[in-house]
Amino acid sequence: MTMDRHWFRIEQRYAITVDDIRSNGRTEYFVRARRIFSQVASALGHRGSELAKYMWKDPSAITRQMRDTTQEREVRVVLKGLGGNKSTNQA
Image (cartoon, rainbow, N blue to C red; front, side, top):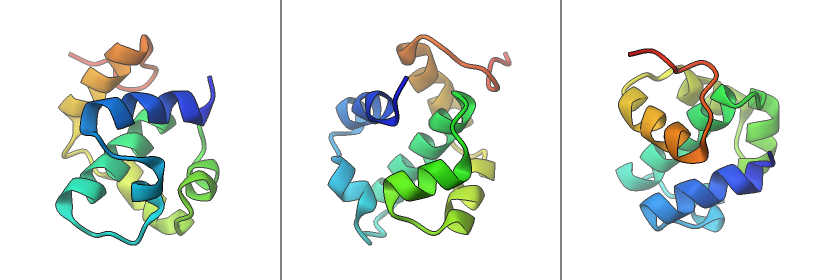
């Protein structure tokens, strides 16, 4: 699966574009979508450096987003919609 396919699911769910996540926008809505996308892509096997390159963000910022578990339930919902979840298949 490509990152674009994963992003499409986030885009549909949150009505946000890839340009929005690549922007410097810091509204909670954008930050939340970035965080969820990072965690979903990571759970599907994408590396932080790959995510950072895709989102045009600093790798350390992506790593922080990947570690933040505040959106864990939402991440599971998105993963279920994609039909796969490697690392968040708990409860």
